[in-house]
Length: 258
Image (cartoon, rainbow, N blue to C red):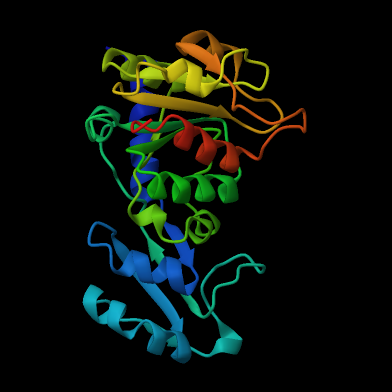
């Protein structure tokens, strides 16, 4: 019996993920990855200076580094990468199932990203999500930023601690959260209702905030699936916010403490 296409695709995706590795770079990103016991570490390339700065983390991780001349840094990074003499090849983190991660505290907050592909934006969102106590950041497996060195560097360590889950279908993930009792709000600059108004009297409920890419915004399918479209209450018509800034403000506006 021939397997359905979706089963074949799922198996292919799983195999591809098994082969996938990421090169993290920069002292902060590498140090945090070294200190993360959940991170599978494959290869560490450092200059002597960086090795000295990372000595404690390297010893803690039990990794044997490759020490190289700073003028002949051998890690396969983009030429513009500011590596500070440290790069490490790792396997992407596996945070597990959406449903398990998003159970979280009494009134969890989740950020969902609809085709946000810029790794710097996603890195900044992960950093804000960690600071503001979000249970997870959720993107799509395709058409969203994967784990990369640039994302990790912008996240400033948050990638190692803040769950970042990539799902096959965002609409299905939204429905899954709705079945768990989440109030799912899509951010749209033309919405008539503010975030504060939408969560008024419902701050004890878990809330998911869905943000689209700058320019296109949310896709029509996403708009149809969320519980309500909301906007950030702004002082005047000054244009739109960067998506990472919008995520931080939305998390703060929807906070459970009111």
